[in-house]
Image (tube, rainbow, N blue to C red; front, side, top):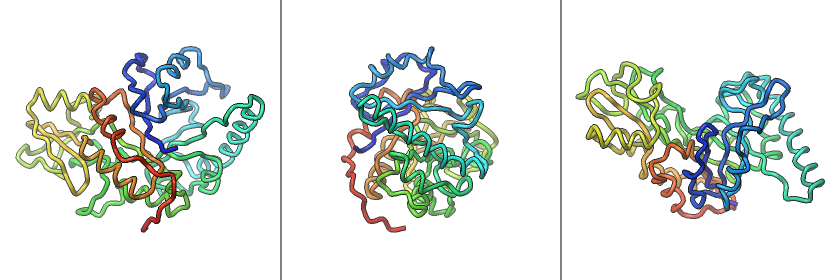
Length: 310
């Protein structure tokens, strides 16, 4: 099955915002292990979530960036953590098979969210990932942010001007070169943008000099917030063909993000690359389902591997 996925954040308890018809899989993000490594599901309303996302499949996400202890999720793992991932996947796949044997049910899906590039954090256990996981979700965003003193496309598909390795194209192809079949690779798409404060409002392009974060919480804004900001401030919105991204600006405020056009172009790219599909982080941040709907209306994915020029 092709993947048209969406992450739903656990801190948003009103599931009526989920249009399940737009997705094949909806991820509940997150459930965090306690100090005994057990999952506390008492306050998660998982039953309501599963009912709300039907007919899409519900997937439970364990961990998260702020999980403590960080044994199941770490945005910046050490080399030994990456090595141990292979052992963990072996144990979890065995547990999935045991559960299916005991219950007579279809085996549970086992997936993992990984950095955008196979070269990001040491050497990943690609053989184990290929054998034990149904697919992997590549987090293709956060390449740029307030740590840069210039504006940028934080989820750039390409970067022909700077020839940067921090692009979705470079990252996905690194996973394929490492040995992950395209049919087991799912491309991440952000439903949020990153903001800057321009040094010179008269020079508002990508790469413009900036001095720290712009509007939004910590320099980020959901797509819904971006749409409202653009309307309220009569912001100029520009589509950048080089990076396949959008940005808007009003005065010294600058926001880089994906809109319908860039999202659709990226999904078409994923289809040409023969990927398993795409996912959004996170669908509660969409504006009335605008981008999620554009993704769902894209051409259907094929499950067959295709020739990929690396």
